[in-house]
Length: 306
Image (tube, rainbow, N blue to C red; front, side, top):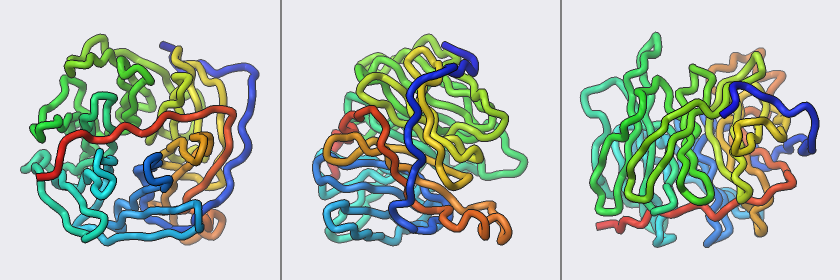
């Protein structure tokens, strides 16, 4: 654990470059599918799922029935598990059909937010408050392989984010973004959680922790909303590298490409006025960088569509 520690020296990764000028209102959910060699992301406020194929440089998008906050790959590559604003569903990529699984926090003014699969093929996600001012009324949940939903014994967030798992699956990372802290806990194969603790606190004056991914060396890469950067922390919580992103609101990251050595970064335009957008015209696009690290194949959800 390290409260905001920052490396004094070390390798610096290149500045990220624009890949897809998608102009998403709220780009999120960066996910590389190693099985198909494609990159997926979502525009939450645009209620659209996006896919980019590096083999021909083409992008495809699908309209969603409501805001798509997060999603997961499935063992069957023809399906995705969707974390829509109010519920979870399966999505058939061939037909565009959605299949409802379970509602999330009915009766609360919240929506689904960040999520990732654990190493056992279960989907772990959190929610965020939709009210103003923000209150810590959300939760963290796990959709099990049998499609049962359980709440995890973690502190209630205002904005859940940074959900990721160590290479061995024994550590879960997560955050409540307004606290500007990333936390870690022991995560057992049977689903048990213990030893919740501070992992790191953002050292920079600007920015909040948003989406994360873990590389094969156990480093946590975190997109820092409002800070125009992605920061890598070692397993001890100390910063080792960073990528400067030429837009102010990077939102989520994934390591992908043929060798899992390309860092994909989503971003957002939401909250930027006309003057800000005039100086940040690529906001809402997808950016890439090439760090000196390799990723891990994204875990897939092992529950089957009905």
